[in-house]
Image (cartoon, rainbow, N blue to C red):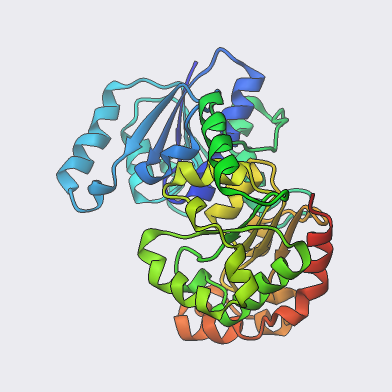
Length: 353
């Protein structure tokens, strides 16, 4: 049997959709699985034993419509027993339509009944044991394997060579007997980045309690912003930052996190990667993100901070989409003073080893 799994978009989405592949392979190792993903997410799929073939959905297709059409039409010649569209947007829907397969599975929308044999309705609430993004992906497996999905842990796979190289790098630059703490300093955009004046307090407090070396994670295009954050930190905290270990690529970030004791900061791909490497995380969620959709709380292991926990009235009868204007998000973020969750952070830090 051959399966095509389609999951474009961001790192966290791709990581979670590897659970589809993992559960199918555990259930029946003879299945062959192809996985469609964007180029910028490929590093999180490298060495994954549950994926047989990775197919790149090139970012250039956004501006190259003819290239997109040729890519989609090429799937008419490929035969799959099942197609699972875990993305559910225009490109993946078109890919599903033109792929030769008798069984097509995707999320229910008012227009998808003629596209998918099995339009699966999204689960809207969770008991807290698993967050909705995991539950909904496992739900897509129903038409193939019923309710036999057994694994809820998504993982990243590093090679022995990579592990050796990063160990040597840490031996060279880490002068402390304590493992570093990774700081997720920037979100993917301004709507997902905790205000610097608060983030600086959080970082200072983290160093004050742990005295552990710090590593900052950010994209090269965010360097000027990081320099501004750096100047807001206390002198002792600045001295704890190991700039030589700043990750220079997605794969380098994964390797670096594998040698850290925890990741603290803005929620996003950086936090999901840490979870995939079984690292403790302390994540600050943007007000526009649905916490139950992306987080399962594990006391002092995977901790989340969300404005709704402290100011629920701000969210009553309001659509989170309305918060997406930067001014509105900034105003909401400013309510999330670190003093509100200082004790929670302290408990998390004291559990680190």
